Image 1 (cartoon, helix red, strand yellow):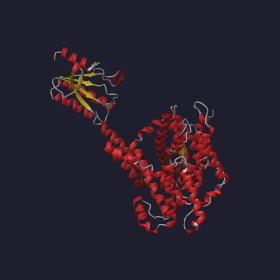
Image 2: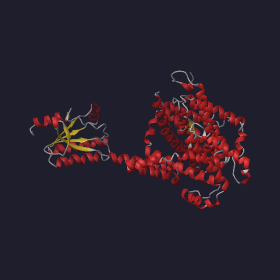
Image 3: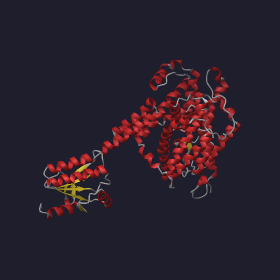
Image 4: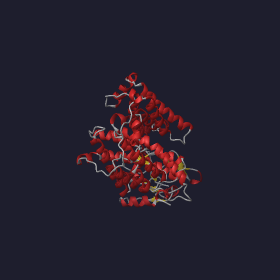
Length: 539
C-alpha cells in the first residue's frame, strides 16, 4: 500500500497502473507543450508542470483518478491575465510573472483550505461555468487557427482579429494547413476507432516524421525549435511587489474555475467507484502543487477532466499513473529534449484545437435554452464576454448576472392560498371566507419581503378576518424579512385581523423569537388553526 493507492481494496494491478501512466505521459507531453504556447510560455514550462507539481498533487490528494495538469481554461486565463499586466509573451519578465502567478494561486488555494471555503465554488453556477469555458475555447481556437493557417494577425481585439484571420485565408501556407488538418483528422479517427491509443502523441510523432522526411521545415512549416534540456531547478520569481498584487484577482478567477470543475470531476468519480472524497484535502493538494509549480519554473496547474477520464478508461484506480507520467516526462526533458525541436507548431495547434473544441458544450447550451432561457443568456453573455471583454471581466459580469437572476426569482416566490379538502386536509384553492390559509414557499428575506407584505395586505383588503401563515417551507428569515413580518402583524392588528403561524419548525420559531417576534400564535397544523378559528368568536 502506498500514498498513491490509499483506500484501494484488494491487490493493486501494477502492470495496469504503470501502463496507464505511460499513456498519461503520451497525452501530457503534446498537450502541455500546446497549453504552454497558448499561455505565451516556452514549451519546457508546460513539461515542467508534469513533473514536480503533478507528483506533489498525486501524493497529497484524496481522489484516485483526478489528474492535476495545465489545461485549456488555465492556459487561456494565464495569457489574458498576464498580457493585461503589460507583459509581452515570450519575454523573460512574462515567464517570471507566470511563475509568480502559480505561487499566488497556491496562496489562494491554501487560504481556501485553511478556512474551509471550498463551498464558494458552488456560487459559480453551471451556466456561468459552461459559458466561461466555451468562451475560453473560442478564444483559444482563434489563435490555433492562425497557427494552422501559417499566418500572423496584427489585430488585438477579438472581432477584428477574427475578421483579419478570415480575410487572410487565401494567404494561408498550404503545407502548414495540410500538416495541421491531417493531425486533427488522425486524432479524431483514432479516438473514434482506437480510443485506447494515445492519439495526440501518435499524430504528433507522425507529423514530425513527415515534416522531417519531406523537409517541410525548409518550405515554411515552422517547428518548435530548441528546447533546453535538464530538470527544473528551484527558482524564486523576480517580480515587483506591485506585480504580486496585480496577480491576485486573476489567481482568484483561476482557483474558482479549478475548484468548480476539479471538485465536480473528482466527486463524480469518487461516487462512481464508491470511495470517500475530502474536498478540503483536494484544496490543500492544489495549493501545494502550485507551490511546487512556482518554485520549479512551471505554469499554474489545475484539474484536467479529459486526462482524468482517460485514466479512468484505462482501469486505473490510483494516483500511480501520475507518478509514472512525472518520471517519463523527467527522463524526456533530461535526456531527450533535442527530439522536441522537430515538432511542427501547426501539428501542436491541431492537437490543442481538437482538445478545446470539446469544451464548447453545444448540447448543454441547447438544454439551457430549452429549460431556462434566463440561464442560457447568462451563459451566452459569458461566452461572448471572454473573448471580447477579457476573461476576468466576463466571469465577474456573468457571476453578477447569475446572482441577479437568483434574486429576481427569489423575489417572486411560489405562494398559494389553501382551502379544506378531503378528510379535512388543506389543499391549494382560491381564498374565500373570513379564514385564509396562506402558504409562502421560500425563505423570507430582503428580496421577497415586499411581496409577502403586499399579498397579506391584499388578503386583508379582500375581507379575511383570520390569516394563517403556512410556514412549512419557510426555512429562514433575515432581518429585513423579520421587519416585514413585524410590520404586517402590526397592520393586521390595527385592522382587527387575527394572524397566526402554522407548521413552523422549531428552528424557525427560535429565530423569530430571537428577532423579538414573541407575540405570534403557533399551530402545529392548518387543521389545528382552523379548529381554533371555529372556536373563536368569529366562528
